[in-house]
Amino acid sequence: MQQPPVSTLPSGYQPNSGLLADKIILVTGAGDGIGRTAAETYAAHGATVVLLGRTMSKLEQVYDAIEAAGHKQPAIYPMNLEGAVEKDYRDMCDTLNDEFGRLDGILHNASELGDRTAIRDYAADTWQRLMQVNVNAPFMMTQALLPLLEKPEHASIIFTGSSVGRQGRAYWGAYAASKAAQENIMQTLADELEGVTGIRANSINPGATRTAMRAAAYPAENPSELKTPEALMPLYLYLMGRDSIDTTGQLFNAQ
Image 1 (cartoon, one colour):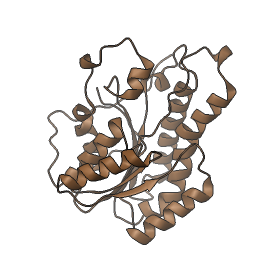
Image 2 (cartoon, rainbow, N blue to C red):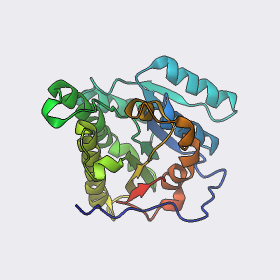
Image 3 (cartoon, rainbow, N blue to C red):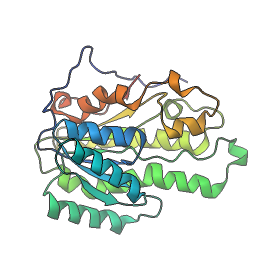
Image 4 (cartoon, one colour):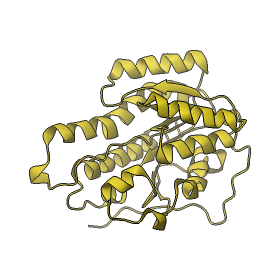
């Protein structure tokens, strides 16, 4: 099966230190791994970051780290995506509108891995949980927050893809299917919004990265041989910042 074409970070790209000055950016799964690193990196480049996750203690640690570094005070929005329903996202839109009046970007980073097992043995409740967190949540959240994303002249939505979403692989089950769905949502949304609003949508496949999720998927792997989340941040900055204003509907590989 032929894979869709993918893009990479422009060669030699160097983000300006004030790339995200005065931007309001929501990061899901901000308590750990790539989400935490992205939140701290966005804050370091001038953004006010809204930290979304289900574990308050982790979000508070990120909040404290951003404040300790002297960056703009972030906000915390605790939410368990597994149980969130449409009204929760409408309430989120109202809250963010009251607090900030707009939204300049969303990084859909939160994901569930699920079981590494054959389709014939895959538990239906696990499948449904992954579809809820990895597909339904970013769909409902994006839909609810579009009015806030339409307020600035330009806004960016970054979805998180995977190589197994672009080419299915044995034993990846719901994770692979959910990532394929998420990237299709991105492409559909980008096509609908291009030329109509200033909102652009793209996806990033992080690749093999030193995170807890990667360790769960590959327990025998040596993490010291993997790139850290920090090494991927130039692409996350590029797609969130003004340097990618004319880029939409693209699948990016971070490695």
